[in-house]
Amino acid sequence: MPIAARTFRTYVEENLDALSADPARAALVHQGRRVTAGEFRSLVHRLARALRARGVDRGATVTLLSGNLPEAVAARYAANLIGARVNHLYNKLSAESQAAIVRDVETRALIVDPRYAERAAEVTELAPVPDVLVLGPAKLGADLLELAAGQSDEPFASRARPDDVCTIRHTGGTTGHPKGICTTFEQARWFHGVLLLPPLLYQLMDHPDAPHTDTSSLRMLTYGGCQASPARIADAVRAFGPVLMQGYGQNEAGGISVLTQEDHDPQRPDRLRSAGKVLPDVEVAIRDEAGRDLPTGEHGEVCVRSAMIMKGYWKQPELTAEVLRDGWLHTGDIGFLDDEGYLTIVDRLKDMIVVVGGHVYTTELEDLLNSHPQVLQSAVFGVRDADRMERVHAAVVRAPGSDVDGQQLRAMVCAERGAMYEPHRVTFVEALPLTDAGKPDKKELRRRADQEAGTLA
Image (tube, rainbow, N blue to C red; front, side, top):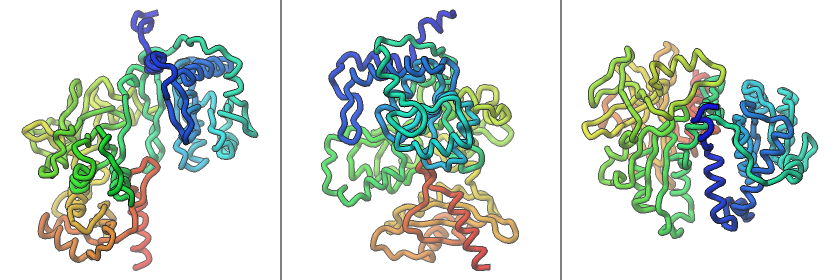
């Protein structure tokens, strides 16, 4: 056995060791129920032995269909401790889509939250799996918790190796067949937290109780995952204090850059528009369509190289080769680096609107619309007309009590950015539709715009 394999410790082992320092303290709290560190650690080892007894071994795929549940976290830890790869299903996907993923990742065991037992029955009817294990009593499968209760809670020796696949995380599937992003056990050790998506941050800010809630104990609030409005982030700094930090990255790339708490200056909208400075041990290059490096300030595709780059897309070698070239991940994001080393993302390649006269970067137009005091949120997207030319459309959420109209917004855009950026149509909506991942769903907005155009034709 290689030395690296003998000495390697998984994120599960490191976390369980940390929990053993104070077994009585709370490790997880769910709906008023507290699970202590000792209880959680014991459950993980019991579950690992129960899964191993059912034939789950290193290199197998364990798929989880669950909501927020302490036992589901323990099951994920247990599967990874064995050396199995874990795949989580988005709860909001259709049974057909979930079944396609279950089949695609070659699921050895499906672990189910009892609340999703009926959905699991639908999924396994479409995509049978060798074993269905439920985290409690249910009408299908075996009760995994009951099986675990009969096992020892002595530490289970991990079978994982650094380069083994630890997780297969699927994209939301808004652009076609979901892509399974493979992260290794070595890479998993670098994941230490989660980000709050900007739309969720806005919901916190706009909550009726927000003005009366004491947030003085808040020390850090990290957000990211999609473009944020500089105007709204400035409002968040004023509301919560100097606690915000933005993280930019991708599932395929891990962390890329950080905009620190010190950089969140409401008087510097240009800085709030950026994604911060590139992290240590991460290389970023801005490249043109031919793969040539571009100078400071020029727009191009953001390409990244680091130890956190994914191993590849699950069973999609052609797509992997398309985005991973010579060790560099081509992110599909358009951006630029300034003289101080700050990275700014201006759009996704697929979202950029090609109009007569040039390119419209949707995030730049969204930032401008969101800067209007009567605009709460906006999403900009392209829609092709009868001549197959792209037209700029904007969906806008008004601030409560406001009466701004489309003509006023178009006039503002024209004055600030010129006629090329002026929206062909502005539609006012109560709320922006969101994807399963919580991001503005531009595919759905395009569908609505196409449907409206067909009705008007």
